[in-house]
Image 1 (cartoon, helix red, strand yellow):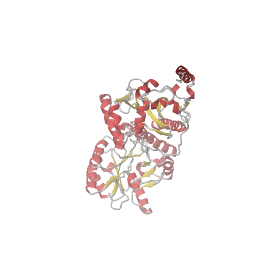
Image 2 (cartoon, rainbow, N blue to C red; image 1 turned 30 degrees about the vertical axis):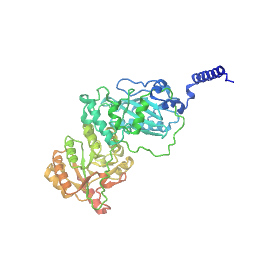
Image 3 (cartoon, rainbow, N blue to C red; image 1 turned 180 degrees about the vertical axis):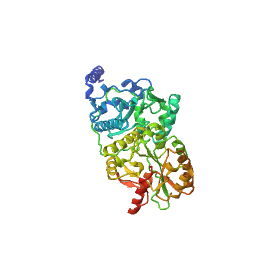
Image 4 (cartoon, helix red, strand yellow; image 1 turned 90 degrees about the vertical axis):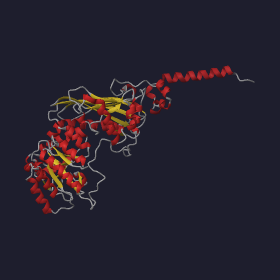
Length: 517
């Protein structure tokens, strides 16, 4: 007997109708991370029907509706300091690593502003989500700081992997340093005449706010004053996805996919296992002062450290050209006010692999001022360099080589080792290029730390001969970190020769105290 088809058909239709009714009436908050993202498995056309389109303004990153993120809250930063602070950041359930990172990072940003600008008045920051999909959350922070130079806008974008429990900076969107360098070239071309491209280098502090617009184009935002005058409108570059796609890391590809589709409902179903190490390692744009290609512990290798104090100066770019021509590295003990005058030169030195170290803000004799003033003077330059390069210095040189137990305590507390010298060219006194070159070359034994100043034109000229002669002699010109290896905060170092005799240390200190270092 044939089955009763009308009855079966009616039953199926009723079941389908009941299922649709349940889906329509189920509260959105009951969706899990898996059910909220189940549309990821659909085809492209099906996804477009299932999810709303990505939203965002022209030339800006995608903006996610916070109402689409289950349990999303806003927290206000608690900052104990003289700067008037109004800073908020998002808090997502089951995302404690993100919350802790944002609180720590934003506190550090305000503190760096306070240290760098002694006229710091107020710091305001707000946030938006730029992606929330496929286990990835993008958080964009827009800040306005008001200080001695007026108001200045700053931007940063962070990417949180919900499964790994790791927060990544914007340069992690790119495969490696070579890829970030390629991005820098494209961005230079894009901003064109609207920006001063002499200040653009592939470093993390410059490329710290990168995301994607709703149409998939890459959006790079620059802080005010980095590549254009601080008073100018927000400076940004928008690059076609086809240009940057080959440069992206796996994280960058995920970020692109997450930012170009709208968000209906997103939830982090469970807290991550944060026991594992960061799987991505050091971010592109973070330049190490240690060159693995040179081993200064090898007895067959002669290494010397060329060091330059009091800059950067007007002649430093010429010096950098000389060093680059001969593949030499140096350490620049920078002073705060010149850093403010020549930030583009500082960025270049850092980007080209030279070491940046602290030489105070005002060049005082640290033994003649109190611990509080010494800390403030050093902290100012620490913050200035950090804000321009993203690099946190761990070496300093006391002006005039003047140090004592009090200076040792201050530098130990700040995590800074004291670097003196074994060869003093007295370039500040002689202003004679030939005499400076002869002194440097005569003292360029293995492990030597040679003191010069890149604010003198005669030293810039002398450096051409010094670098050329050392290279022809097979001497490796390295950073202080490369020469010494690990150093201890607060301790003093004069050279890279192992275990110097106590008497030699005393003699070197006496010579250091008499120098203009």
